[in-house]
Image 1: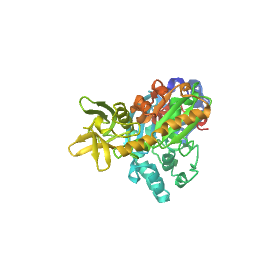
Image 2: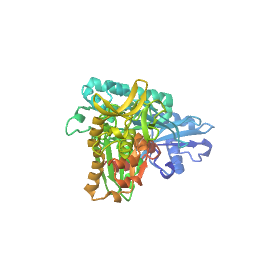
Image 3: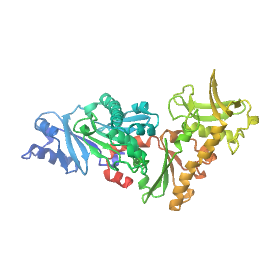
Image 4: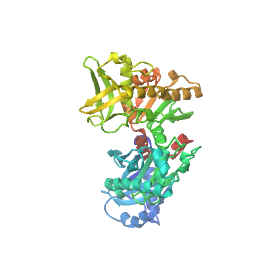
Length: 465
């Protein structure tokens, strides 16, 4: 990624003072001339910290490193350090449930660490709406913010602290508001206006994030209440806005966020498809988290439901991709009717009679079991069309057919785990998605990481606008 981009968020140049042949009347001008010659860039300013260090480093015998951070169209010489000092960037995907971290070695163009932690905000509410209602009170907003900052700063400390010179963060609109301490009460009142579209570039002390004091923090912008920085980072990563032929970008989480577009247009729509696949309908449904079943197949001859769980642990619940798999297999095997009725005679060992009506037995271990109720299946069938409706609506708005769409990009854990054939069988996706689907992983986090390698502010503005 970096090889084709000259706009790295942070650049490092190793300098041997012996190689500097021409000294200007001022030390800063001497270094600026050398940087211009080596990098081909001319717009440099200096932090006070770098100016304090510059005279001694210029006159020492051993090499040193100049650390430069991107700000607008120019660069700031933010620090001057010993040759052995590490220089990092850090990308963060601030999710409502988990926070993903990507530690990036600027000089080696290498991701050194990639991991996630639980977002401490979950203790204020499993869903964002609960937190937003709670945070209408300023003291609660600050409490939630402080918990978030505490968790992030602890990871920053563990990962290198002042060796981190650039931090790029993406999150949905609510998460960005919590991080910055912006009022959230109007996000839950029609017409749901966010405080700002473009949050901007911050000095670390402004947002209370403990990277190098002379570094910079970039928060990905929001395009609306339902189209946050995580979506913008995802689009930035897959480069939908550069493609010739229109494609879909699909991210199913709490909501289903779908963008159709190419270099000429970007059209977005959001709908409540996520809760139908998590816990909003199915009592045994959940997010893609440890102990969740994410893949299901059926062996009728052996009376088996075969599944895989996240972490290879005993299952506790079913995430969205597993529910889609199960529904498709039951329909294919004749155990489930198109109307959502479980047909007991077609699998009497698994279709049980309960106090709440018929239910399908997915898993049983001792007294614990995972059941899918017929009433839940019928509710799912009514709601599963939301995804197809969103896709159809976007195509209709621009006069396209599904066959004219080049790719279906699926983001997040749902995109990694979904069996496209199962979703097509259930009518959630069009037939053309079978040959055009592409999972892009955590596109939000990867987009934040891409920004460290190519900090193109104007490109991101084009996506948002």
